[in-house]
Length: 165
Image (tube, rainbow, N blue to C red):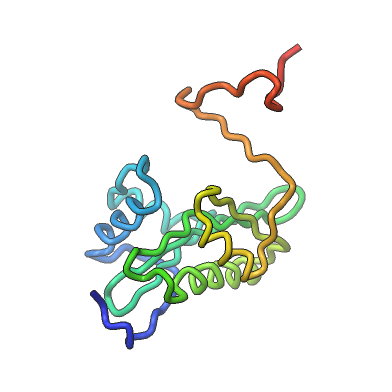
């Protein structure tokens, strides 16, 4: 347990330091049961990417949460997406998620993004309340996914999937 009197600091991760990988993988396990643990090379690839910025929320040396901001220039402008927001069970309800999302929004604003998107599973009710309180609004859109390994079943007929013809 970390001392809650020590402030939470959110910073972009710019280099992989010893001891971070285990803490990040611990958070990743809380975010997704299907995500594979990262190797040092995976984390270095994320940190070195021009398209992503990984933010960590720390209290002292303890990583309480993380999120990723994805920035991609496309013909309609700079696309900004907040991904993988996760706060450790010990840090929930303490403003850590808000601090992470606000840091990502500040970085997107500085990069010149006009909008920032994020998606969230319907079951994450507390996260939805947080996102709305920050100013996110639900969009009238449908998110599609194509599994490169064929692991996703095809959409049932009549569900809005495209039918070749």
